[in-house]
Image 1 (tube, rainbow over the protein chains, first blue to last red):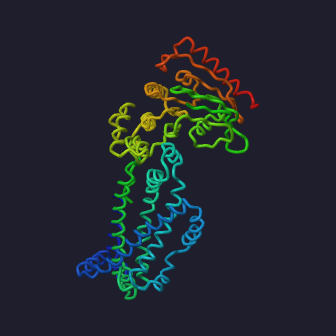
Image 2 (image 1 turned 90 degrees about the vertical axis):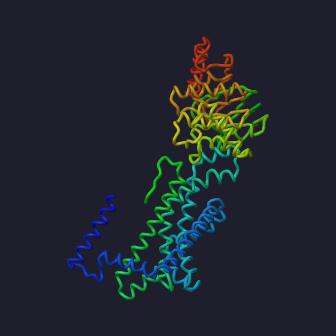
Image 3 (image 1 turned 60 degrees about the horizontal axis):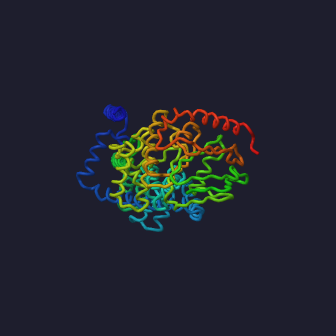
Length: 249
Length: 248
């Protein structure tokens, strides 16, 4: 609550400074103008195809990134062969700023949706891979031994011990993954696209439109916060066995 | 039903245990005591099939499924309710979910936990968690129960209560028990026979004590038996002796 208030106070100060003519509205347009721009974007319906493009790319990247990252993480954790094969690649990908791959994806996959999904996916995959790969090593050995002495084989170990304990690990990196997925989609559009919030941003930049830029930034922030909230609820539900739910963001 | 002959166990080249002979008969309660590091837990793990012997033999006159095992630490799945935890073993053995949950509820009731089936482990007290773990093992109807200081984390009252309930179940069902403990009083109060291990490495059985008290037994009342004191003192002196002297 206090944090929300301080944010509000900051916006008010900004508004006041602009009203007093102390900041140049061309560079730092006052919040009410940004809000009006945002309103216009929706009122004219202009923003919908762009929102759709960005969301499709980010959510596809997120979904497949989690699935692929999770599967590769499990493979590497349980098979020394795949671990030798995957770990160096993932470490390398983890070490570089992965957005530098954006131009390459445009060359390979064109300026359409595929290149944005690919960038968003590659950002998410590495994150989830390490969450799962590391998570398997953190599994409580007492639980494994318990299920084994009750007669459980691989199936039961995976189902009753590994997957639930990995869920906790993966959920904690999920919020970071959401941010990554949007980074991938927007940066991809920034590099080359005909639609999307990134494309609009790049347009705003080329026309020196700070108002539009800020409106788009606000829009992305709002949607990511919304997703955080949804994932927070998911987390509270999936981890209800925990002593205290760590909801919110 | 269980016979251990000339068993040698260890994790490296030097055996922790060597030349260990031990027997548990049908429905018998047998305890294993000894100084720390004498390999009591190692021996139990070998009997459970979790560790390969370096030498000697373990003869089990029953299938591995008839073996129950209770750990020192709580090892309930934190993401499963008490009922689901108890049902887990039954489900692994192929019982359909509904029936396993019903059976689990019955076992919870038998161990004084009716109404707590929907709780997650963190919502239970230490004593209740132990009872759930015990219900989980008993629900599989084992013929031999292996226990490694199962109640050492509980306070005296809780421990006495759960031990009494355990003894009632075990005597009623005719389950044989092999118990590892550092509590000599507990060993005498519960067992038909106590084995004393010498100090490791190369620990072996130093002494065997038949315990004469009749069954069914009350683990508290039995301490008033005139034979209890002398037996306890003898066991205590022997344990002190093997703890002090170096390994042969």
